[in-house]
Length: 546
Image 1 (tube, rainbow, N blue to C red):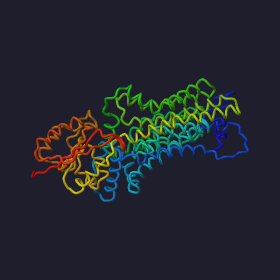
Image 2 (image 1 turned 60 degrees about the vertical axis):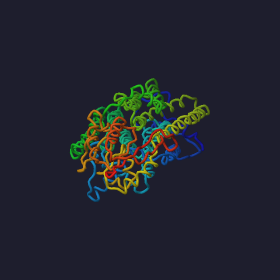
Image 3 (image 1 turned 180 degrees about the horizontal axis):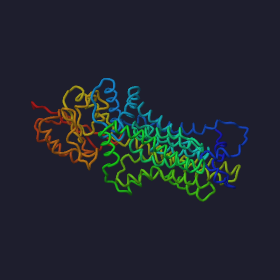
Image 4 (image 1 turned 90 degrees about the vertical axis):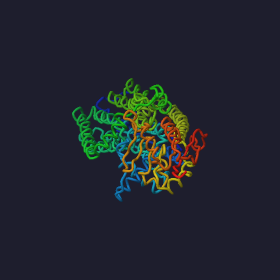
């Protein structure tokens, strides 16, 4: 495979002389670069196809690596219930009050894939979104910096551990990232057109859908807004540039505001406790930053280098500002999560910032290659940079496997719990019920299921939930659980003493005080499909005649 056309082609402005400031805008480099003649003609986007093939192969190996994660199971289960409500009018739990994304967008879509091909198909749906995000990254970087920069930007992003993991993870993160990437590409694609209203309307719609899909994605709305402004400078000019940003903001507000009004108080409550007033964790800011650095350090370093190079070289002031914005975007998620003292979802949300930073990183590699003398030395430098990609590929493959197998395999627990749940009609208390609800037929009978965070009453309403300060992941009220256990409300109780350990110990003590509960199974589980057995599920059954 001949790499020379992609490697040798300059992706940035000529080293000397610099283009005048009025020429630095999206697409300028590709438009003003002298045409090269070559006897060998190859498709211009073939390097992208190679990147996508590697990304797909590395993500596909994760599709069957483990059973469903709690969040995957929750969203797929919720999607099936949403379809049952839409088609048959059956009741559903109050998902909007504790989901960090609208339950009517991604979950039903993922449930369709799950119905067609199970968990594997739902995970492959995420891969489609992630491949789309990489394609949009290529297109955006090519407009801003040229084809060679686009190749390295797409390659660096495609092999990141978080990127590969999201490509085999059935949650809304991949869909949301794709939509934010689409919005960014649209504002860049508008270029220096005097009238870009249609592009801004489309970008605003994509951004609004991204925010509805995953509320935390709103953290990157300012990045897209400022990018829309900078793309229009210096041409078509200040007033039209401001008009673009205002149009984008107006479209976003017009779409989001009525959606919130229609959704009502449950959606507002969900946004508040999952995003705006998210409960803090116990991780130190240093821990958050160290984790983030270990996953995205390669792109962060290269992106910062790209921004610095743009300022000290003759790339143009607006180009330097754009690359600085893109490089800074990668710091938003770690800064937010460091303030919340939590690493939860850091790898998933951080991938969105890495998407933006990858453009600046690709520019840095392109400028490195461009410094080599034209001809053999430049080709050798380019090949060396391609070979150097072996390091992020190896690192990303290792990290993504760690991400995809970091939770207990639930196969043994589901096999034992299935007859207890599906052959009975009583209510059940399970520490993490979403996995069993997803895998078992009785999961559709959601009123029967309670967790150690909330008890579902006979009317279907929640009770005994965590305090406001604990957020949606906190443990429920121990006194409320004691009261329900004393009256034998649950026919089956299953605890693993992991997520809500203190409450589990209290519940176990309450169970021992009720002589009608008897331990019937102890199910060990491991940290992933091939890990050791660090914990166990203890299952009790209520036997009133015992």
